[in-house]
Image (cartoon, rainbow, N blue to C red):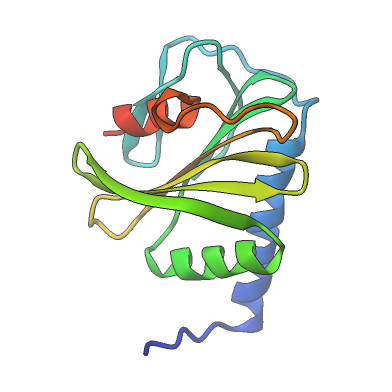
Length: 164
């Protein structure tokens, strides 16, 4: 059994990362930045912007897209594969519930797909790993009051299937 040792600083960094991602998902009042193209790049990766979505925020390792106040997609490139275990444990500790885990291949990526529920949002979380040590997380969020679309008919899946 491998035990990951993290310092207090690493734990705080990931708590803030988690909270930042959740705030982006929940924030409905972000000012949209018009996307000039129908694709985006993040770190060393490119992917399509789903129909009806536009870029709302972009940082070095994160891109947020919105269709409206209640529908968003987040793409995040982790700095290294070890961060993934810490990220998942932080999600669990914050009350994020995962279900329906599946794995599949998309291009050069091994993809782990899960549905999730967190407070009043639900969606899909995709963990995409091309074996280069920097996994890409793709998640979409919609209100729990709406029906979750089929796995292959949601905007996060469109990002995953176009990821290069």
